[in-house]
Amino acid sequence: MEVRGRSCPVGYRYRPEALAQPARLQADTLYVVGGLYGNPVALEAVLERADREPGGPAAIVFNGDFHWLDVDPDDFRAISHAVLAHHAIKGNVEAELASEGGDGGCGCAYPDYVGDDVVDRSNQIITRLRATAGRFPELVRRMGELPRYLTADVAGERVGIVHGDPDSLAGWRLALEAMEPGDPAVRRQVGWRGQPTTPDDLLGWFARADVSVLASTHTGLPYAQAVPDGRARRLVVNNGTAGLGNFAGTTFGVITRLSSHPRAPADSLYGAAVGALRCDAVALRFDLGRWKARFLAQWPPGSPGHRSYLTRLTRGTHLRLRQAARAGVQLTGGGERP
Ligand SMILES: [Fe+2]
Image 1 (cartoon, rainbow, N blue to C red):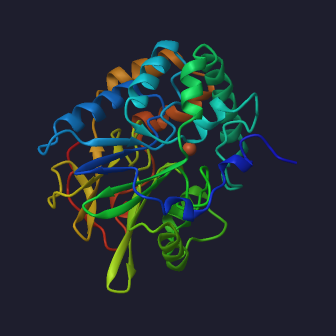
Image 2 (tube, protein in one colour; image 1 turned 45 degrees about the horizontal axis):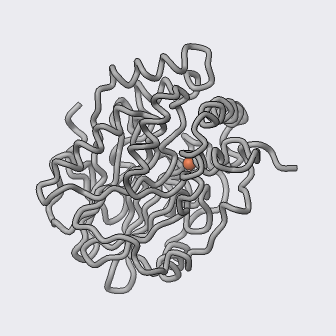
Image 3 (spheres, helix red, strand yellow; image 1 turned 45 degrees about the vertical axis):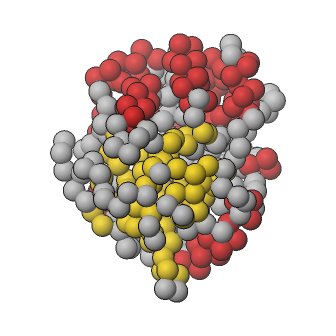
């Protein structure tokens, strides 16, 4: 029997070869923004930062789950319009909103090490969000037409942008906790068990997708890891969430910045180069007071959104920065400012 929030709908599946297409966009600097989770204040910060890029405005790809906690119709509409004015792929949230009465719950395809209480609350959140989305059929239709993956070209390197992993929109195989070599502390914290993702798995995906970089978000914890490939190297980067805190004791979001300019930006947390491409995890700082007020207006104490996300909003996660900067990736210092 399939359980809501645990299943992976057939429509989520694709093959890594699907990414081996001509690049859909080429940019000097590109932001990959995943897991905005309905935070309009973080969205403003992304757009403002993109406009401040010294070489001209950055291109942006929103790689899914831009909606989630925005059950307020005004927020839902504003976020939809802003995101759809840029490049975007769908996450499980948008895919579920656009699915015809289907009910995979939140579509997160949660693995069995994620507790039933978390899955139940996510299913309650998507039910509320679906009611809001029902007021905007045209926006939902456009979300349903978004692609599930996108290939970009930055600095002559091909970048495969997915929501989950190279096999599925809601796949968990690019989760930090799945990556080899495994981080025992991270695996213990999340209670991980399952199939590890090995360097050979990654090299197989890179070859089949014909990309040098894979950028993901769905699983919520950020990291970057270089993968040696003969005399070259490839890179996996997961931005965690743009709209919520990511690290212990912090409240800023994280986005992935890819650029043909070789210098790490001042707000880089960690990064690496692949050929002429510079990749950084960038701290996305926004007005927490404004975001918290928006959040509490929609998810008061006792609500499923409050119970699942307030702590993450105000205190981040268990993750330390050094655990996110994995093999071949350097800490750059931008996370030290509170
Ligand atoms: Fe997701």
